[in-house]
Image (cartoon, rainbow, N blue to C red; front, side, top):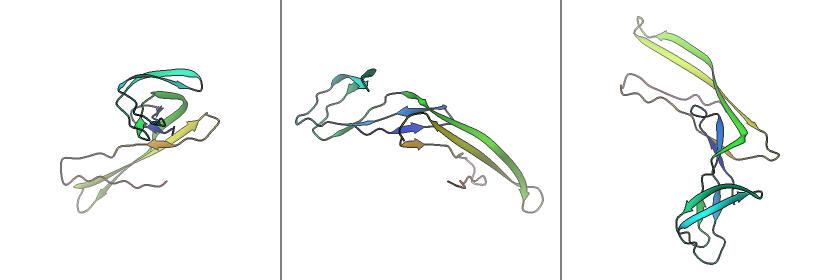
Length: 130
């Protein structure tokens, strides 16, 4: 089983566990419900589709409270560009902080949002600095 986490800090300050479970049996697993245990503890009951041997199934197991994700706006900058004051450039800077209280490292996919505008005159871009 491979453990992956994902987070969308704008929406929630938690990380969500979404492991990929591989059918390691030599026969297909039929469609039905399955109970999931992690470290000997009951975690969830899920519905599985038919899964062939060596096929992987992605399973959502909900929030993992041992991983905290925070998103804060640290800067908003407005400048007037071009002739006159017709064109305005507004820049935002966000800081995303991740705290893992587990004993081991994790694989975490963090998703954030860029604005999408309907007007061609308004543009959006990302200045990635990670």
